[in-house]
Image 1 (cartoon, one colour):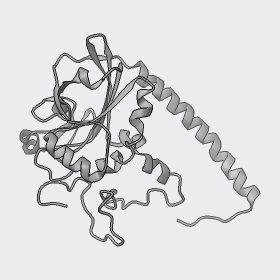
Image 2 (tube, rainbow, N blue to C red):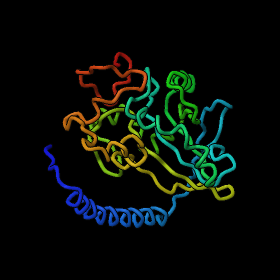
Image 3 (cartoon, one colour):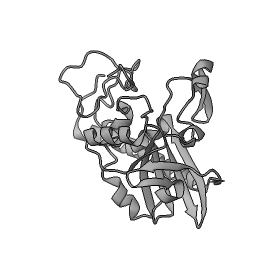
Image 4 (cartoon, helix red, strand yellow):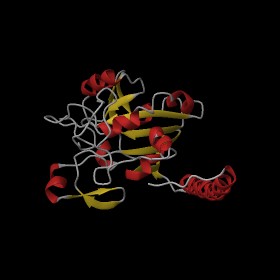
Amino acid sequence: MEHNVVSYDAWLKARKELLSKEKEFTKLRDAMTAQIHALPWRKIDKNYVFDTSTGKQTLSDLFGSKTQLALYHFMLGPDWDQGCKSCSFWADGFQGIPVHLAHRDVSFVVVSRAPLAQIERFKKRMGWEFPWVSACGSDFNFDFGVSFTKQDEESGQVLYNYRTDPYIDDELPGASFFYRREQEIFHTYSTYGRGLDLLNCTYNWLDLVSKGRDENPDHIMDWVRHHDRYEEHVKTPSSCCSSKKGQS
């Protein structure tokens, strides 16, 4: 993309015009956030149980002493050798947030359907310390629209992000949010697909540099690698979810 090179005064004029749009966007974002907060809640009646490093825990247990729970659905299925590289790209930004969320009455946890031992091996490899639990044997990921069955694969369609989409994989990403009031738990919000962009710190930085994300429009995330797998020259595109057995 060619850019005009102009005087400071001309640049400042253009920058101020953009600033007015940024202000509009900020107000629109604030209004949308208010709508998220105003959404009706859905009571959780099912008793979900997770495997954790400290033993079995219910969904209520994941809150700890907090009344709110922020949860990321990480793509790591029972037969996957490693976590999805795209989810790993997101998770690299999770390291420092639990302590800050905790001071706003929010617990943070990552959930996958893989067995706990599989999760902990990958977590150790990646050097992450945030809480990560297993929903193996639970309906949790299926009920929240991020895990899919053989029947879904055979039909070629799944319900994802509140609409019917083509089947892509047996695991997809998402984030879900909950509130606990005494003994009751409520599902307050979930987001999927591009709705997760705001949770990716690196993407938000890339959106502000001159070349932007600079991604291949046909394979937008073929450049992403697990942070311990980057090479100087990567020429072979790879799926964002090439993490199952026999793939790398």
